[in-house]
Picture (cartoon, helix red, strand yellow):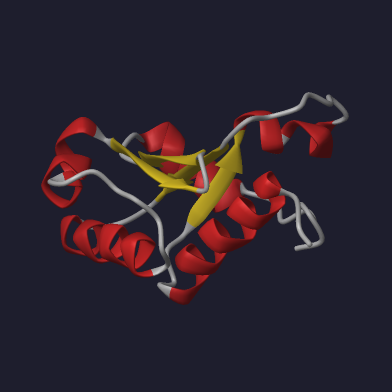
Length: 116
């Protein structure tokens, strides 16, 4: 059976890929790809979505069994982040709204994380 963080990662990535949302994994989970190892407690994603697709993405996380606070569909594009929780763990989803974010998503390098 998968460990809780690995399970959470696979579920979150499945949502993004099924919805064809460009994303970037960053923070603690991405650091081993660059030789720095820590033990992350959550998943951090930056996503590139339009205002219309933001609500669809939030709905897809809910449909995959994640708890996302009421009103997140509307607030996501205003606050530029949302939290989706599953099994006591969190996925922090940041809206790639800045030029830096969008360039980072375009330059992202796919590396295996938990075998994916």
